[in-house]
Structure formats: structure tokens, C-alpha cells
Image (tube, rainbow, N blue to C red; front, side, top):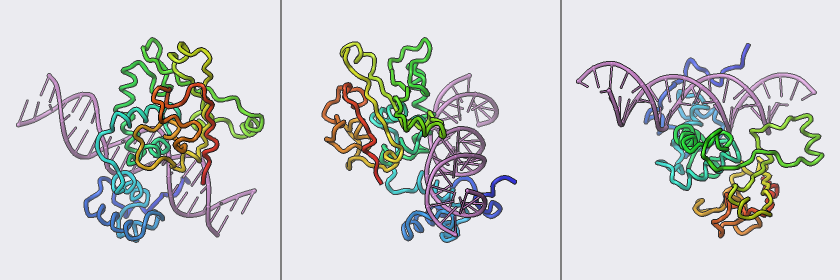
Length: 246
DNA sequence: AAGCTGCTCAACCGCGAGGAT
DNA sequence: AATCCTCGCGGTTGAGCAGCT
């Protein structure tokens, strides 16, 4: 049987969008707002499926999109977020105002991956590839799970890609310089990340905690201290479970 | 100038999650 | 509880472009 098509394919346009289609879509969303993508094409007089309209709006027509090249800061943040979140492009995009998941995914695949490989870093694990010269030591070891969590995981196996529990080890330089440093454990709930919280006014100069939605100045925020790995204070234990929000 | 190759990025596809019935 | 429906996500594709021979 297979799944039913998302739309009436025989009567939908495909491929590149025309200026007229863009104008129609923008005008409709300005008048009626986003949402109800399934019925939008018909209502807007577009011969497109809802999915296509949504994608066009989100990735290209949204007025708050930031076009143009990625800055060094954005580049850096993408690498850091990817090291924590993996290929969760929508979560990464939520931390980069004006950028879309599709744009970041493309940028990663065409630029960042190659750059990391060139530095001898595995873009998947963010560890030095065998024989490589990289110095990134981000660990993907899961934090010790509480008993309740373990029981849940008997039914729902841990998905490594989900990264609900993340363990970050400071780089080797910290281990050399500060012997008593404890690994910082960051537990990030997916809902918190999806909520899209963050400081108003852009990301410039935000610590990693703030990039993940922490209130500036809250425990775990280290905006004023540029010297720490990923903006985390090496000896601090950060628990982002407190970020859960509606 | 023509042909080839590699790269970029907009768009498509299939699937899973979650809400509604 | 089961099924349906819609939305959103991540992987993949392919048209268009730039650079090279």
C-alpha cells in the first residue's frame, strides 16, 4: 500500500519557485500568518504542496532571514553546537538567529566538514582522526544515568543522536594546566533547546551556556570569561534541566 | 569557445512525532 | 487503544554556476 501522498501530485508544480509564486506566498502569510500548511496552497492560489510552501517560506522568504556568508563567530558556534547535538540542524539553527536548518546543514556539508577534516578532526565525532593532528577532545560518553532513567531506557533504548545527556570533557590543555578539573556535565533537555530561548540582541560574545538559552548572569553563564572551553567554567557542573520551559 | 568537473544550495522525499478524533 | 492527519526534521538530489583544461 505505502503511505498516501502529502498532496495531489498531478496538480502541483515542482522545482524552482517563480517570483509570482513567492509574491503570492508572502502576501498570503502576511495576511493570514503561518500555519495550516496543508490548506495554505489552495487558499493562496498556489499549485504547490503545503510542504513545499512551508520550506520555501522558512528557508527563503521569511523576513528575518540573514542572507550572506557565515561569520567566523557563526562558524565557530556551529562547530561547537554540532559537537554537542550532532546532526540536529533545527536545534543548531535555533541558536543562530536568521539562519535556517537547511542553510546550516548545507554549510556544514560543504564547508565545515571539509575544514575539520583538513585539520585532522573527524566531523562526526569531533575527535582527531587516526593519525590526525587535531586537539578537540569533546566526549560523547553518556553521563551516569539515574536509576529511574535506566528503567525508562529498558523500554526506550538510548539514542546516541538525541544527546539528552551529554558529557563534555575540557580540552587536554586544561587537564595539563589544572589537574583537579572535573568534567563539566551538561544535561540538555530537548524541549529546552527547541524553545528557542536566548538573549535578545544577537549572539555576539555569548558564552555557551547562554547560547543554549541560559539567562545571562545565571549560574553557569560565563559570558564575562572568554578563557573557558565552550564558555563553560571547567570546574563547574552545569545542569541545563532547569531550562525546561513551555 | 567548448567541454568537463566540482561545488553550492534550493528543493524534494520519506519518515517519525504528536495531536485530534 | 487505534487510527488518521498534519507538521517538522534530516538525508538526498539535481540544476545552475564557476573554474579549469
